[in-house]
Length: 82
Length: 417
Image (cartoon, rainbow over the protein chains, first blue to last red):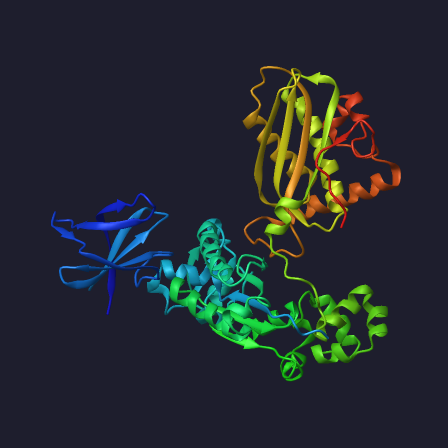
């Protein structure tokens, strides 16, 4: 299974106690996908090119999805099959 | 032989290459060399992955040589800041188990988990948890050695690669450590290994069972140390780097006989002070300094200060002076003439450092050899015997014997151990 890295626009919330939580994914065609629930936040490697990503495992549209955050680049990506 | 301590040695496997394979997952199944600067095709191999190693690619050889042995060899340019980031993250994992962490280069650490066992379980269990955690969180692997002393712990981590834990116990060290070649022992280089082989000593076990007096007569005090290492009797402590940072600095400051009005004059003083600090540093066993701090006082007694990190740890007066001048230019507004200047160094690296293959270590070696030769001449003929060309410009400054004279106000001191 091949994956490619797709960097995405994310709307995120910074809590007053610190911490970043993704709220919505804005796809390149303009569609918006809300994050319903955040299940885990963990330091975990990706299957695509990234050195120290933080993996956010979320529930979106009834399915479990992974959003990755690269702190030193201040950007988010997802792994897309194909 | 005291065996109460529990020491881990954790070694990131093929570190640079492993990080690059995170950046380039498409290269995972290919032989890969991480090289230094790639201009004019003189890139030197700094690290290789398992596939490249199997084809005979060696660290330190030039890329085109490696490519001859391994035509499919891929290469990437080293990205040192990225490796540092990963290294710090991995050390944060070690920190969950103990605060007694002694880094040994960018990819190795010793951990003292003697007291941590009450909280986390046996040394072996901690080692295994660390191994699993590093793999799970970062996608790189470590080999961990577990033993009662630093030397055996390091030999243990070398035994199984990658992604493994090896325990050296009082029950098994004779079958494991003692069978290894003497050259594998920490700090035994080619020259020492040769001398040992002339003495009929080829394994660590031979070394352990050799007559200590004989070793001392051939190798001096070092022979006794190696004998201890081989027998598992090394009792050196795991020394956290943080311990050295706050505790010590070496500095000198100088109030000149007249106020200084331009940068050239300040440079003369910086050079004198830096030489003196370098000389004092080389008389200690603190190793090299990583940070330079300067203080400047103008003739209305207003104080300025700035500190900065050196590009790499140094013991050289010239490198300290260059850094000091750079800091001076950044901080001093030249509204008034300079009355006094101080230079100090701190944040020392104890013991052996991993050779930084990025820098021109030959240049630094030459600077150090020069400093050592100057120190010798000065020791014999007095501190004024050898002076830098710039200093001789102002005869009265040249006559200032910074290290020996009484007009110096030592700033921060080095307290001997």
